[in-house]
Image (cartoon, rainbow, N blue to C red; front, side, top):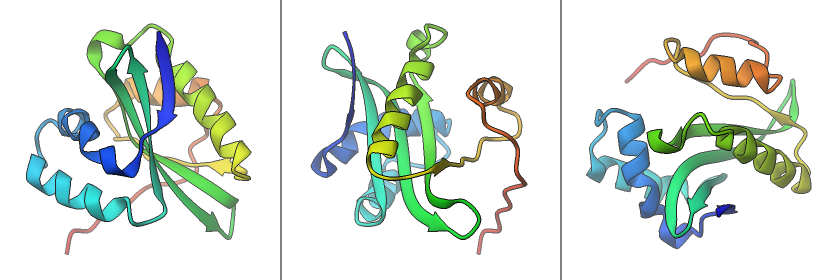
Length: 140
C-alpha cells in the first residue's frame, strides 16, 4: 500500500540514499547529511512516498512568499526509485502534495528541473506547469 507523509525532521537522513542516487553520486553522503541538517532548520519540509515500510519517493518542499506569485512552494529533489516509475505514482504524489500545500494556505508551486531531464519536463507539462524563465547558478 502506498502512503504519503511529511517526514519527521529527526528522520531526514532516511532520504539521503535516494537524493544521492538522484544526483548520480556527485554529492557525497557526508555532504548531503550536512546540508540536510541545515535545510531542516530553514523553511523546508520533506515529503516521502512509502510502499510498506520502505521509502520509494522523496520530494523536498521549500516554503516562501514571492512578490510575483504570492505564498509559494518549490518542490525540490523530486525522485522516485526506478522500480516504481511509470505506474502513476508521481501523479498520486503530486496530487497529495497539492492538497497538503493548499491546506497550509499556499497558492502557487514553482520548480526547477534539469535541462536534459525530458521525462520530468513531460510530467510537469502534463501537471499543468508552464515554463516561466531560466534558472542560473554560479558557484562561489
